Image (tube, rainbow, N blue to C red; front, side, top):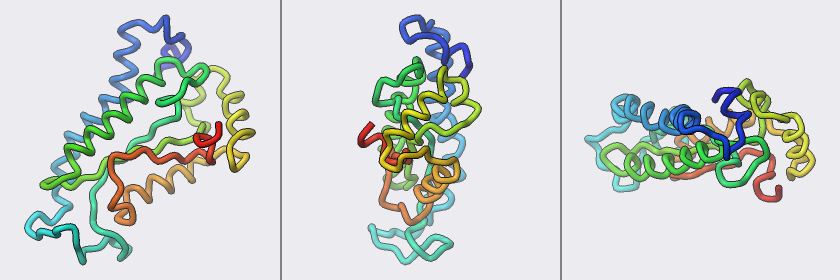
Length: 185
């Protein structure tokens, strides 16, 4: 995501900027998944048919061993967000790719879960490229159920959970970590 792409209005987005935003924010998940497939597929014991039942557990002893791919998204994938511009359609594309990859990779022989975590506005380098990001963050803080922004650590905790065997039954989903803003904002 470049500052140029984030500063352009959606109507004035060139084909090149559109393609760049989608390549970085959406297609990169396909590329990464393709290269990760041999490594992640090796984690599953293909010689033992689990038939949905398993005594194999994660390192923490809870949940089924279940390789996963998790990406980050944002509410702008499903709602119009001021100054988010081309990144909204790019994140919508990303979330659709999550569902498509989950459909392809979750069944045997791969058994790889694919999910997204949609974080609230966290003060990152990319977020600072959004015009009036501070105003957006303040609005979310004022309207979210928790009346505050989420932290990077909280988002990381959700990603950790989704990637763990404790979430072995979750695939093809977008989980929100935004203090409840997506439900009321």
